[in-house]
Image (tube, rainbow, N blue to C red; front, top):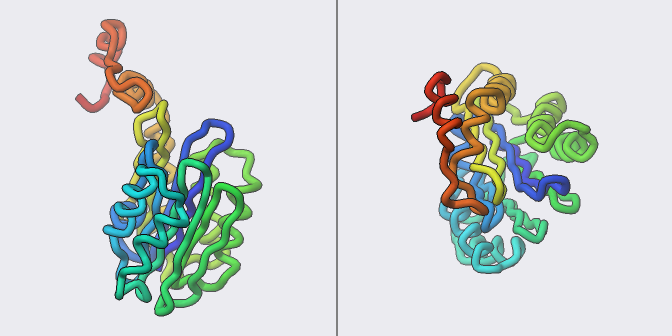
Length: 234
């Protein structure tokens, strides 16, 4: 029903994830993340947002992705219907695929990257996404979206895609969380939204909002004069 990728960016030290599905609202259901905990992707025929949040809480306390995933999945009597992937701050990955997941369902990994999916046209969908991320020369967020594009070209979700999402977190940036909850071509819509969110004046405004490494950041008078003449959130 969904494909997701979680990855660490060696160049920036940031973490990012992307997901797409043949159903609605994949971003709200699947992706979770924070610069002080890591990332999670909780999906499946009966996805548990509790799994996604619980994994982050455990990794923030110092648990590895593997231990955090095990702590969430082992006690859950409904785990056969669910799938979970996680990426911790040390670039460790882990994944779980329940026995009742709709085929094709599995996960593939590389150092600092995990791709998981279910209800896919075949295992090649996962490998195509992983290969596209690893070989793309694009910047980090675009590499994540390239992985989704490669998955679609390989067949993707057996129903096609209706929604897509992107999440990038880092200590030096506000979270970049973009969601296309329903569209005829959600991957194209996500790429368009990303282009708008990283263009001026919106992108310039992001440099004055608080971030983990600078929690008291605020606009200067020059910034305020610029923003007064621009169309940005206020």
